[in-house]
Image 1 (cartoon, rainbow, N blue to C red):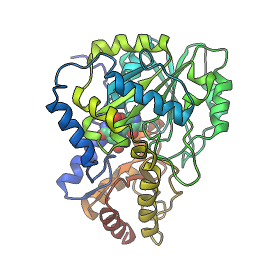
Image 2 (cartoon, protein in one colour):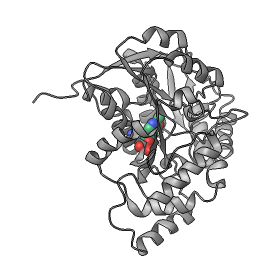
Image 3 (spheres, rainbow, N blue to C red):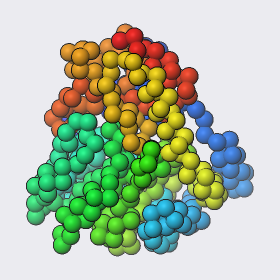
Image 4 (cartoon, rainbow, N blue to C red):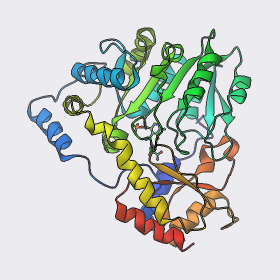
Length: 378
Ligand code: PMP
Ligand code: GLN
């Protein structure tokens, strides 16, 4: 059998969550909350099922949900999207990413990917016969070297993938970053795929800046987002994509032939739930508190860190504690110490190892304090 993805290994998220379960370790590896979503949202899904929203939804999604997303994006980002033609509800951000790449990347097209990068981008590019062009950021990956990005652009560059706020580093792009990117792609036909699943999770005085707020980027961008991150429902796999009409028309052709449409009752519930902006506006302070509980508790440990600016991940550096590579050290921590994390090298170009582990702090404070006790003893 000829594999279409010969190099692709089992996702690190599956590997580490399985190892955590096997060794009964606290699981701060795969990114998901260990607390439940709002009972009101569950009630709304149940109600939608009882009211009969149990057959296919429209191809691009339940219209009132698309309308409420358009209103939210307009309010928060100042970008206008027509709910009828420029928004599609997807099976998590994952489907949106898959469809966006599939719809636009042709054989031998180059796609620039900033490393470390989320693990689905490059395999999806490869499946389309495209060529991933990795641009490696320097640890702790909190700034982008735009000159290096500029140097990676060629006449074959079809797309550039951004992830902001950034998993795994927590980097939040600044106005100057987006302006520089706007400048770089001006007068080219490079598309931007902007993965903004952590859009509501930014800390301190930081602000999430969407490509939707920059006209020179918005006109060529597909923006992906996830209700899993925003409403603590990663298992529901609900997300969406925003793009100008011409791009969305092509996106929908692939969406139609992938899933056609998405879980209907959940869309009805989310439409209703979005009527209350505080359901997403408080998310930054909610997770900032968790980040601070975690970091305060490991202040005296031998791990070093720069506080995460956004997302629900914190990277910790362990140089000076162990000479093991990060994959081996993550395995050791899980098996011997009872704490699972993600080794960051798996997201890097040629698995570059900067001795960093990623910890998910979307957890009850009690879980975070137990994890801190383990880290402090190392
Ligand atoms: N992009 C990034 C950067 C992520 O961290 C995730 C995580 N889950 C996804 C995409 C996929 O989102 P979803 O679970 O909504 O498919
Ligand atoms: N996005 C989550 C993370 O980064 C995991 C998603 C997955 O399990 N595929 O941990």
